Image (cartoon, rainbow, N blue to C red):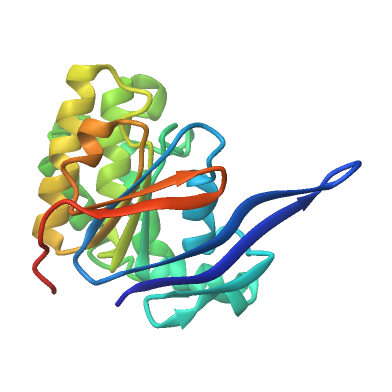
Length: 231
């Protein structure tokens, strides 16, 4: 098991009353699984992802991620776990505008202290996603699909144990989204990474091993689509 959320609540204090965003969330993910988290807007999908990735802290409950009880770590300790074991893909790409595609992909490796060989590995990953000839372009010089392919290369550059993808095709047209989706699954299979996808796209969700559905901050179903070989 690489991820386990136990009795997770997330609440925010409002002017007149407390707002409960997540209400007693419980689930676990085994190594090698590809899991999608779906549900209507406001159901808590992105909040769950942020908590599981250590980007936020639950009001109560515990989260274990890749062998660390991440819900009880300091911010610096969480950052260290993310740097060593986690990859991210965001809907709006989150590339640094002042860095080239190559430099963006190199960032996780440099943060790990793996500067030696980082350029070569980043070049290989950009070649793998079809951007070998665009490595020295800046994000503003790339299309949305190209930017997301750069973010894919960056997400896999530090050889993460688990990868979190928040609406990875949400800002792309259908054709471009299909290309990015294919690359995501191909790279994930090659690298044998556990993959958690938050998505509104049910076609994408149905290609995963398992679908967790949220509604009103609660898990209303947890359905296995197909068997998964454990890593």
